[in-house]
Picture 1 (cartoon, rainbow, N blue to C red):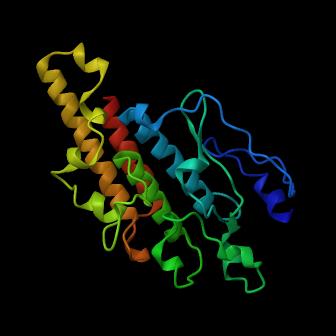
Picture 2: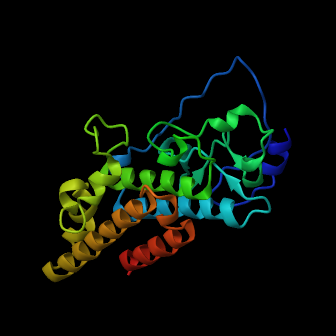
Picture 3: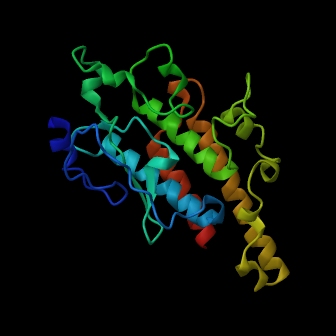
Amino acid sequence: MAECKSLRNVRHRNLVKIITSCSSIDYQVPQAEGEIEIQNLTLLQRISIAIDVASATDYLHHYYQEPILHCDVKPSNVLLDSDMTAHVGDFGLARFRPEVSNATQSSSVGVKGTIGYPAPEYGPGSEVSTNGEVYSYGILLLEMVTRKKPTDLMFDGDLNLHNYAKTALPDRVMGHCYPILVNDDEDLAATNHWQRQATMHSRTESLISMIRVGVACSVESPKDRMTITDVVNELQSDRNILLS
């Protein structure tokens, strides 16, 4: 209840507003209606969603009065409204950063997210961290552009989503990503050849940049990962190129 009281004060356009909390052993999760198929999202929509999630994470880590770790960043915890604005929700595993080093904290802190998304350093028992959360974000971003889940059966042994995406850079992007993101758009049909080529080139470059960001966020070493603030800046630059 103390956590909920503090979380109720969180205000950000890309976070689901928390009103109160309840505890029950008898509840049902309502079925969502009108769910948007991820394969129908354009590259611009995807990069905008990625920016929204990164902005929410940046706010929780650096700008809220008590730095918060969401601890379960994954696609199913990102909700889209009618304007396609993304909102991060489900704070069931969230922790205030000062609590992480508190030895008297509850054992539930040991639950660090959904299989495939937690950082590798969490396995040996490391504490949750902003670097670990960046890793989860990186996996989410790579999933958005490759359409591969981190738990896909193709990932076995040393092959994982991070390595799969890394091998695509820079010349094999189209073989690893969704071609429709670059060249299947009604707008292209209304332009001349040179305009189409320029548009496809800018989309390809943006797609490469998104993969690079996802790979940089999901490297194994926590200290070598990209910061979430830099992620926001990089993706915003990519979106501006697409919009121009």
